[in-house]
Image (cartoon, rainbow, N blue to C red; front, side, top):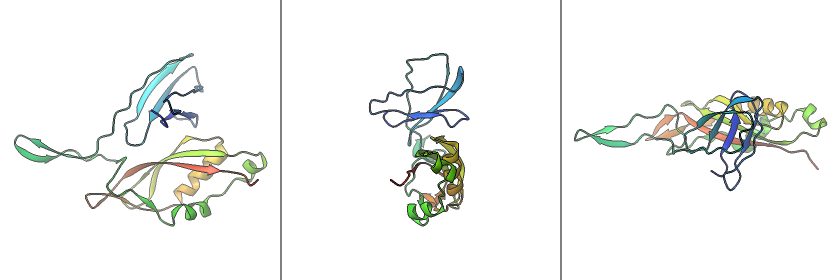
Length: 180
């Protein structure tokens, strides 16, 4: 799937699938578990070892609470603990410009000429606080740390489903670029 995230579990190593869904990824260990994910789809975990060169992973759409008929009466399907899509998605208070004000480009990374995009996965809880902040991919641990710190200082208008605040998982790219 084009744009899917591929990450070595418990590391900051990862890749993104290209337009044809293909990706190249160097696992940090001889045997490692990878997570393949895409917004709106369930994640898949796959153990790879050695020089695995051809791997097919199918993602299925994530289930969002829906109504179904059971035994002749209407019943509610279980509502997920965390939504990947909600009727009203979370909105960052202050927008991205407010986030950029909180984001500090580490001086060591600037001096080293390090730039790139940090991809974060977060869960915005019912109160609008970012929780479960996880680095999916980063060009540098310094940039990852700065992005996580700024995200944890952020607040959101919570996502809503059927008018009620719910937890929503987001994947956000945070771009670090040196002035030219």
